Image (cartoon, rainbow, N blue to C red; front, top):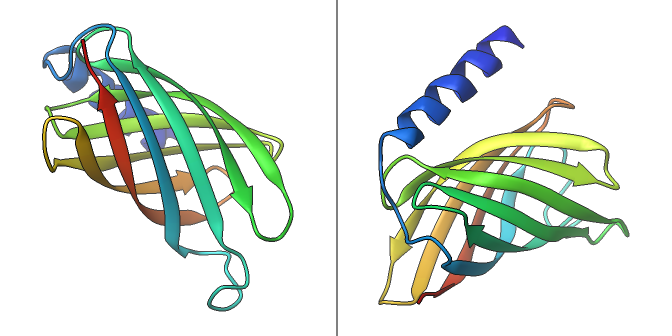
Amino acid sequence: MKKNIIIVTVILLAAAATKAQSSGDMLVGAGLDFLKSNNTGFGNQVQLGAEFNYFINGEFTATAGFENWTAGTTSLVIGGRFYIQNNIFARIRGIIGDNDISIGGGYSHEINKHWRLEAMGDIYFEGDFALRGGVAYLLGK
């Protein structure tokens, strides 16, 4: 647990020294887990998520969204992203409904001015990990 706190602290400090998007920009995205440690077989438990990110400043977003599992549960997600560089971010999310917290990071590849491909990984406090791919659309000023 102490190791996770140290890692998150280092990521937050690095994020404070860099600049990513502009204040007021919004990023809307959707993703699908292609690997999750608690899956019992291919396609038995698919997780789909959608997020809305509002850039508070160039390095930090406030995040809200949802996670939906084919197993039948839907959870509200609240958290934030910390952009270490323009395309590299760390994130922390509270998952209300599943009663968990995840920390992770990702890479956002710019396709054009608005569209992004995203790859993310998360570690959940309950002990699972997941890798996710998705798309995002930047609503800029």
